[in-house]
Amino acid sequence: MDAFDVAEVPETRQPGESWDLVHAAQQGDMAAFGRLYDRYVDVVYRYVLFRVGDRELAEDVTSETFLRALRRIGTVSYQGRDVGAWFVTIARNLVLDHVKSSRFRLEVITAEVESRRVEAGPEHEVLTKVTAEALLGCVEQLGDDQRECIVLRFLQGLSVAETAQIMERNEGAVKALQHRAVRRLAQLLPSELR
Image 1 (tube, rainbow, N blue to C red):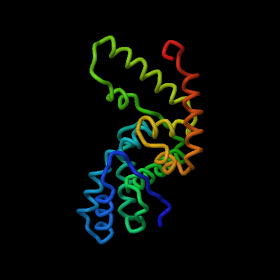
Image 2 (cartoon, rainbow, N blue to C red):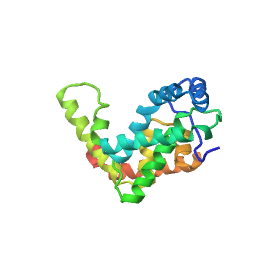
Image 3 (tube, rainbow, N blue to C red):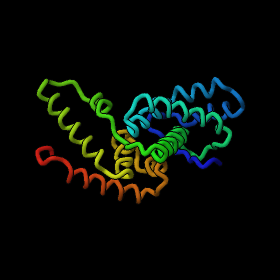
């Protein structure tokens, strides 16, 4: 078994089908790996983009993620969960390597969060933008672990178990980290937005 464990990724609801594709890819079926790529590329790209804040770099890291996955496809085995977290874990390790090698500051990109807004009147739009910008500014002030926890839990929508798997911690540690991060965000938010 590779150092990468697997967890369920919410965007994929048919883990059995994904594992069928993994097994086919392990037998040399490159079309099966292509279907895995199509299924998980957006999940991996969004994760990386939230971590690095640069679209070009996110594309490069996403490509490298799938290249490494292809090289290591024979090492992954089914453990009752979706293979998507294996891809995210590879991406996470690449991002951490990048951060260590270039001392790159992790940031959450404002435009991606703003794209999640619901259409409303101009007043609501302005308030939403101001609130999102303030919140993202506060998220950027968190420590690396707290920021990663918030990104995984709330921006990526992963469960505590999935977040724990990716962060290589137990669920209790992730819950405590999330609690501290949310409390810190509450302190950092301007009083008019609390």
